[in-house]
Image (cartoon, rainbow, N blue to C red; front, side, top):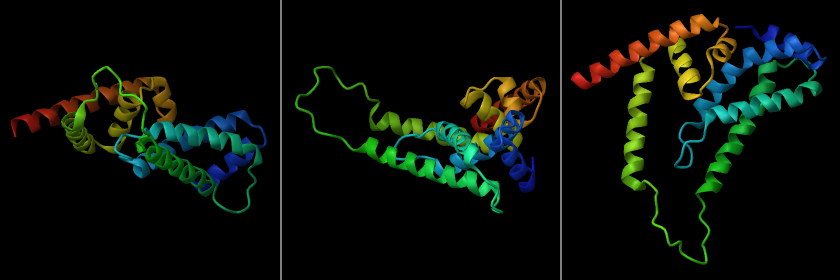
Length: 190
């Protein structure tokens, strides 16, 4: 992980058009942005807003704003998390708007295939159980499982995001899944 001075220096080089600095900067920033979005969004508006989608929007917004970035003595992370804060707020607003139901002129002829309150309650309980199991993993293993399984990144993409070789990602994923299985078996027998 780079320090703040190194991030600011990378940002200045990236703003000047250095493509390698841009790649290195994004590699360092993305995990921080994802964690920030996951922590801030959680469960929003009765449905799950995908924190990873919002994090992707933040990364794109940072890339778009990078050519205009100038080091003014403020930490670059403040610049990034300012953008992230706005994108998270936008996601909260979008989730709220999605909940607003407009009246319709006619009622559809087909039955409602919505899972209903019971199905949503069961899904929420399963989500809570899975979150509790994931919280028992080490932060590194949890991040690998989230990136590989939940987000769907390849071992190579996860390796870039976490600064690991793809083989090391696969080994760590295998170990993390084995620990999750053991934790799940403990829950069943308890």
